Length: 133
Image (cartoon, rainbow, N blue to C red; front, top):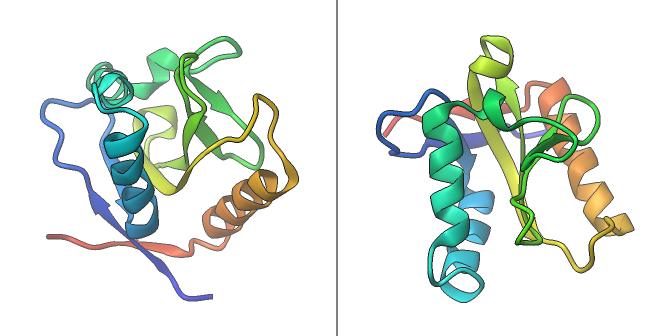
């Protein structure tokens, strides 16, 4: 398995630093243009990062554990999900986003579950590396 390159998002004054793969960034940018032109989703992600993701994790919160140590970022008003995991200082460390997609329905379908499984595999195999810009 080739390692997935991740780059740090240039967000200022964040307690949680976000690193993102090229594929996930492409999906985010596509969603920002078509599905989130007002920037509401992205504003939430920035707010979560600035305050620290650990403050937004839980059953009825926008950041939830899926399985295998992988989490998803998804405010209640959107079906768009950023999928990744924490690296470093537990839930206070960096968040590594490997995939992002727009869910078809409220429940995950098989292909969406497979995508999360692929992120779990990247996490377990340390199949990623930071690329400094």
